Length: 166
Picture (cartoon, rainbow, N blue to C red):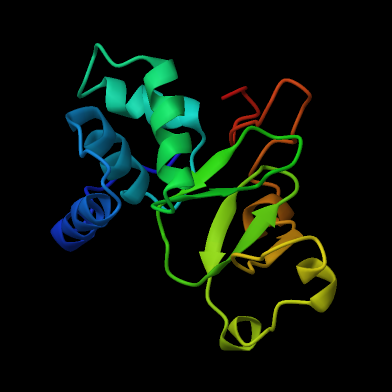
C-alpha cells in the first residue's frame, strides 16, 4: 500500500469552491475524507479511506465515510470507478482521464490519452438516455503481477505482495 501524501492546497481550495457552487456544506469530516482521497492515486475503497481518516478523526464512522463518498459522487465532486463485482472504488481526479485496472491484484491507475479523449459518445449509448461522461477502462495484468511480485487474488479479497490478505 502506498503512503498517502497531503493534497495540494489548490485542490482543497477548488473542492471547497465547488461545494459552495453546489450549495453543499464543507464539514470537517467531508473535507478530511476528500483530503484523503485526493492525496492518493490508488483509487481506494471506502474501508481504506475510513481507516486512514480515522487516524485523524477517531470518532468517524464507516457509515459516515460511505455516505459522504456517495454524496460527493452524486454532486460530481469525485467519481466511482471499478463498478463490477468488487467493492466500489473512488477517484478524486476529476480531470478527463481513463483507467488501467489489473485483473490480478486490483490495482487501478490513471492514464491520459488525447486519442481516447477524442472519442464521441456512441449513439447506441444515447439510446438509453442522456449521457453524462465517457470513460475508458483498460483491463490487463500490471507489470508487478507479470513479474510475479504480487500474490494471486483469492475469493477472500486482494492479496498483498507477500500473499497475505489485506
